[in-house]
Image (cartoon, rainbow, N blue to C red; front, side, top):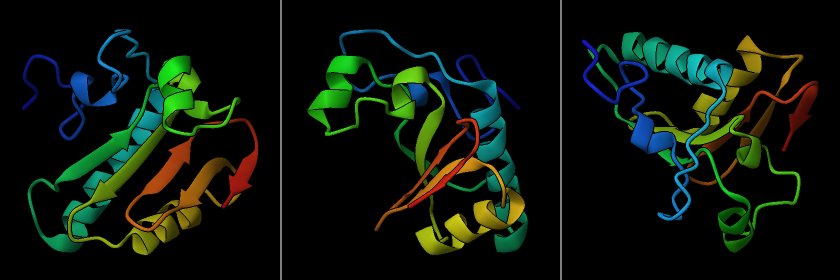
Length: 127
């Protein structure tokens, strides 16, 4: 059941907002929300739980905050088309592999030590 401020069962509006605390930028691409929510639902089945704990390190970023955190000039976060996510109980590599197998020919996917970057850019990028 969704409560006020929730975008999906696992994603709330405040979690996708820019973390600078000043700009109120919270635009987020519907497709990236769907992709991450589908991953949550997949791993709920795998883990046998009714709701996974989704951690969103970063989603929308204003230009100033993007520079502050070392984002690239063309960062997908600035367009609201990216999320850096982790799911408790699922290794980043397992989450990355899930996205890679489900979307082998599109999306931007980056594997980091504690999270996975996913974005809905045109084309395909991997790192």
